[in-house]
Image 1 (cartoon, rainbow, N blue to C red):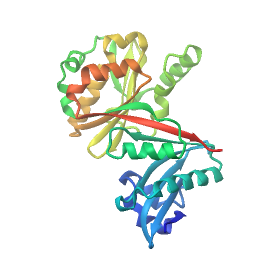
Image 2 (cartoon, rainbow, N blue to C red):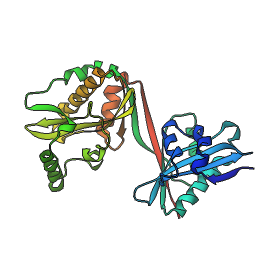
Image 3 (cartoon, rainbow, N blue to C red):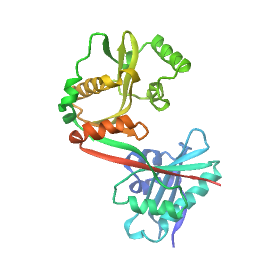
Image 4 (tube, rainbow, N blue to C red):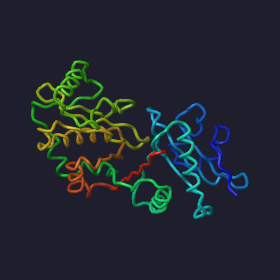
Length: 293
């Protein structure tokens, strides 16, 4: 007999091992972080399962962060019960939609996708490539080739962008959109990594950027990068990567991670054609969602 409960802070410490390390702080502060929803499963007063979700800022949707059942309790329907209970709780809190994004190719991928199917979620779709590398990437010949820029270009620390440049970019975007919505840099500036978040100027105009974040003490995540379309075939974005990578290595931080949304087909092709030999791993994320009625 399993007991399912909406988790409160007083019991959160007993369930920390049932989610990923980077979500444990949220679990510990679950009372103060009202957007976090956790459903625990216990057997004979011992925690054996946990599903954790976060309600988005719009209060209309939510994302499943993790779902886990101890090995000896799997294939009992417990995962299904946890997910259905979470859906009910989210619906009670006003959410109309819930989604999940996960890594494909893992030992548990098939089990998770079977669970989603049982709970009538939409068919999973591929979302992104996830690339991991280190300083070996800088050894690629095509990186060396584009390391030096013509004199009309200059690379600058993103923290030095001027307010005048910001307004000029925003105005240009309003008049004639030139930046894909998911690559507008200003939405990624919260806690960005100043060490190697860079901008690119061409003839005194900002035409490119790479905005990064500290993923862990030894890893930097390359979060958002873009160069104006008419300059892309010249490899200018590689110049930004090369400079960002050099500054990272000079600080003795050698690992990096970045994602490539599959809708940016040109970048996907570039990764598969040129980067694979220099990467430590290349994986894919998938996503699914469900409308809560």
